[in-house]
Length: 298
Image 1 (cartoon, rainbow, N blue to C red):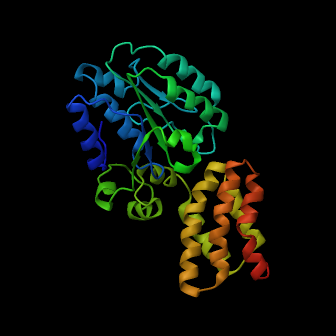
Image 2 (cartoon, rainbow, N blue to C red):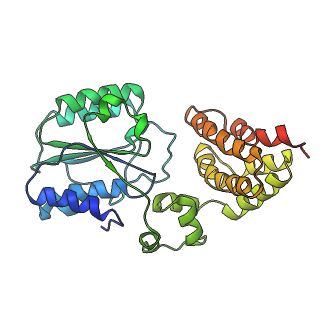
Image 3 (cartoon, helix red, strand yellow):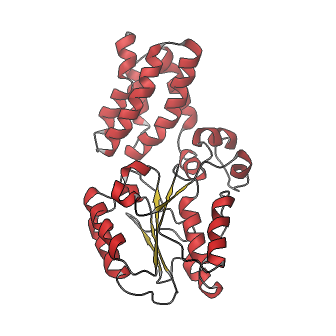
């Protein structure tokens, strides 16, 4: 298993393990797809005896548990077809509470990796707070979050924050993959996130770029409908917002017209509404609303 980047973080944590220092419960926070979960699994493996590492990396070890809204993937462990609009339920937290009330089965220290902890419902977070307060002292929790502030302050105060950033261009390019789109373009769009780049690479970026160039120049209801036809659900809309923001900011820098700044700001509200499960069709039309307030529709 290879962790790309984040050498300072992994080095510091492995040094503590090497000295026999029990790792505290931590919150790995930062952009989606930069390797937080991969690092967490790697640390869990390297802090246990060598004989147990293979089973940990393949998610077969009873004392390294990955909590997610769906099945994790060995060595990743990001679930396939990851969807940031899905939630971790209170039932998942209750099952973990029962498990961590007991001592580890084989390892000296149990690790519980909470994938996308910021996707827990409010009820699940309150239940997890009790887990943090009452768990066996041989358990380390590693919470993975892309939005630090979606977690309750009472949870954040009980874990050590560890900040992750995007990968450097050199680190990103070291990842071997048969990219469909230009890897440099994907690097720039994803801001150094391999996970996000992999998701974007599956999308019609060239078509989106063409539609955006046309609609920002000449607002058209027809083009809004054409864009909507390329977006299959809330996950696609979240990904579309990335090139959308790049396009409108480039237009704002070039022209200075406030409409493009309004479009960018409105996209933040649209993203929040995605998580509240508003109709995708409605959101796509709202995304371009400011254009039609400033310019006549074709």
